[in-house]
Length: 216
Image 1 (cartoon, helix red, strand yellow):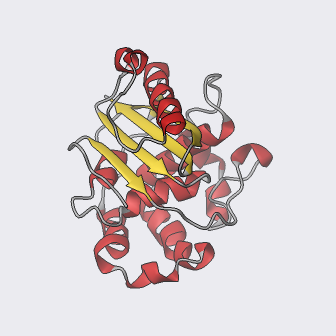
Image 2 (cartoon, helix red, strand yellow; image 1 turned 90 degrees about the horizontal axis):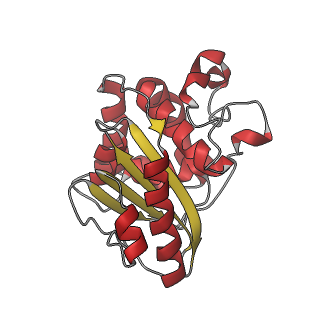
């Protein structure tokens, strides 16, 4: 079940089998190294823009890292990660999904390189408050239900993912965007933003929820 509330704010639910993707801090390898050793080249490490921030954990930082790799190297991402993901994730059904999965491959093979996104503490504070409150309440959506979160709200585009805990699964769930014909999440992740904050928190219903708040 997925909901799209506003043009610049998107939400996705997609429980998935969490397989085979290690977190960056556990090794010096790229988080995409399982899909191609090409990603281990030093040139791609410039996409790890959140590496040294002290207000996000390693999983949240890796979400930004992978998003930047997809934005900055869309063709390589399509030819390696997207090409192998259905088999490696146990989601072979995606291969025949022309509208969502195949359209993402076509998009990334033809799109221009997008600028990398930098972490922003205001965006993180906004995302963290919403993720924490949503998790405690079992809430699904974008409306801030507490006064504290209303005051801290800071985004022009927002994506919320429910049920995934691995950074790559979060990013691909939002990019593939199943059941959202407008591709609202995909447009935000690949859109004209320069700042982002990411927060993952426990969720009462879906175990995990991750909020990504974007700003220009």
